[in-house]
Every structure is written in structure tokens, then in C-alpha cells.
Amino acid sequence: MLKKILVYWRDIPSQVIVQRGRRREKVMLSDRFQQAIDRAAMRAGKGGSGPYLAEWRRETTTVNAAGELREIARAEARRFEEAFSDERLEALIKSHGRGAVGEADEKQRFSSAERLAKDGKAGG
Image (spheres, rainbow, N blue to C red):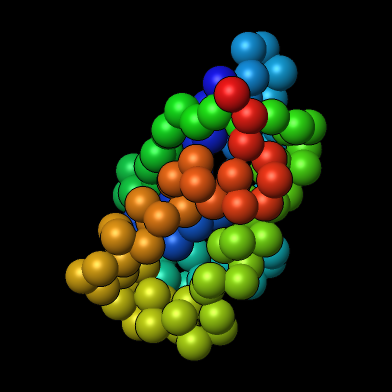
């Protein structure tokens, strides 16, 4: 069993963390995600550090997965990179970092152990 932690500013992903016991691996998403977060925060009037920091959140799930933590985290980060086109990030910027209805469904898809299993990383 491992913990998968996805870090978001509002609905824009920023980082993937996987943890098994005390071992932890972190993968930051590419600069285009941080740039989108910064632009969305400015549009939303969250330029000050307090209001900006208040919008960060973590989603934690527990999954059965085998393999190296670094590779599991990298695979999850690749899925975000592929799923969030520049156009999709631009839409999130314009909506102040808030996703459309159905965005939660897509995030749930990223949280499923089946995605890890598809990549041959699942274990029992």
C-alpha cells in the first residue's frame, strides 16, 4: 500500500507525492503548471501571500502499487502532463483556477489504482 498525494492550487495540479512508510518521492509538474497557477491567482486577486496560500489543497488516496516510488510518481506526473493541454490550462486561468463541472470526475480517474495497474505498477 502507498499513499498518493496530489497537490493543487484550486483546480490546477502542481505536484505528485507518493509515500510508502517513511519513504517519499515528489515530482513537480512542468513550469507551465506553475505559470498557470500564478496567472490564475493574479486574475483571482490572490496576489498576496495569505490569500494565495489559502487556496492550496492536497488530495490523498491509498492505492495498492508495487515498484519504485520515483517511477510511480513520474508516471502519475506524465498523466497530468498529457491530460492538461495548454488550452485546458488557459481555460483554468480564465476561470481563476476553478475547473468546470466534470473536472472532479477527471481527477477521480487519476486517483484510481486501475491507472497504476494499466502501467504494470500494481501489486497485491
